Length: 260
Image 1 (cartoon, rainbow, N blue to C red):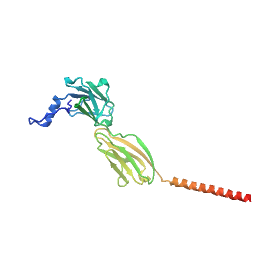
Image 2 (image 1 turned 90 degrees about the vertical axis):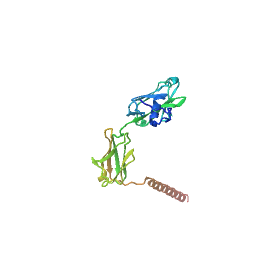
Image 3 (image 1 turned 60 degrees about the vertical axis):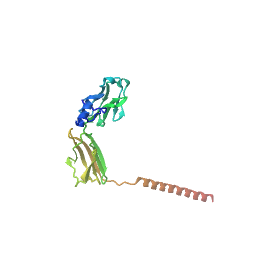
């Protein structure tokens, strides 16, 4: 496994291609290297999937620096190490691997000289997290929005929406489909029971993983008359207070008459 050390510096004194000299420098002058399971590519990338375990071992290759302590970082943030794990070989384990570990870079360096370092980057492949079903009840003339999270690596090649087994009719059915690369949305304004009641399904097509789907059971009901609650309560309060004042006023008149 080749890991390029940032410590290596060479000048192109002999007219050789610069990338060749950098490669030669990384092979001959590195003080720190990382061994991994699974192994890394020549560019320092480790391929993994969710629930995998990735083991990293950092070694000091310079015999004159064997007593030096090591530091680990994940995306520039320090990784906590026990005292016994600060010397060569120092090990870090990522388990289980999760989608959020994609593009995470792990760097090992000498504590007293951070330029003597080596890095590897995780490349996590994962499918869209689509499964199960959702029940939705909505009244006619309301707006409906269905969402399917399509985040994946590699990116999905397509998202298909169907209603009762047939591709949604974007023109005749009044549907609008939007996609921001993370979420696919199916929107319907002014839902119509005759057109929009039924079983919806979104299916994400992946170039690496089996297709995944989510189902929405949408029941459209007739529109009911709704009374504004706040004005109704306010009106009842006014009527109640007026009635109480009227009763009090009446009793006062009766009491006055009795005194006479």
